[in-house]
Image (cartoon, rainbow, N blue to C red; front, side, top):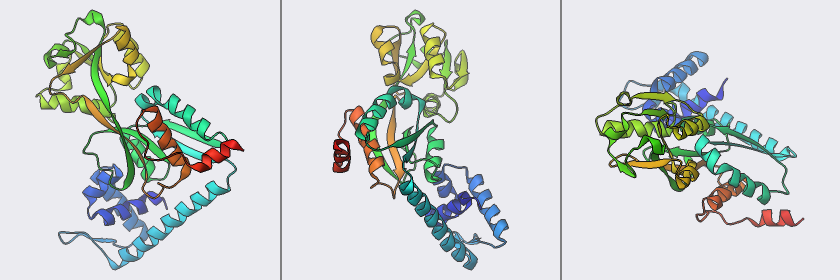
Length: 315
């Protein structure tokens, strides 16, 4: 049986509702309901009593939830032991394309130097925030660096807050838009380059527009693309505007090839965090990576350099 269904049942029981479990698992409430229904049909028992104002486990549900916790515990223990037996440590990381382009090369340089005596196989994927969080919950990822809105629910994860990411609209000088501050209406004659629906930067644009009684339809056109290089080159050529991380385009801004714009009352920052499973905070490899991210961002790390790594490098 796919362990996602057992994980979903545990989330429903631990949170007390389908809607809260959906937020924790970053699924729709309908998807959570369908998973529980599938589990009940597969086991041919009723697991939850939905007749009252609160959800309660049936007697069969008590047996299943106890077994589910044990099964997932055995699975986690198996994965941990297999990692220990492996001659090479394996590390799976997710981050956004923005973080991957701007900071990841420096972080990886620090990380590989700090762990030069330890053979490590790295798997790096670029995910949206929801994809990354689901990967952590499902045990497919060891760690994720995400950008997100403040209200996102990460209560079942261990998080490390990073400096906020500054966002701004960018255009080419030939667009002759007012700078640095402008009115939202000044942008609507331009074509907007935006990320896909799952991206936080697009969510911020929609949020800012809604606060001002506007929508994406007010722009002259909207091009949806996850290719950051294409977006930058199009903006540089004068073909449109984009709402991007300042860190991603700082060289263009400093050289004058791009102009940065701020709209009063528009959300121009997003939160940024490192997230891991709440039970894995003592793993030295994860602590090492967290420390390297903080070092590259030039902020105090929550972890001091562990003597284990210093000794390993001296061998």
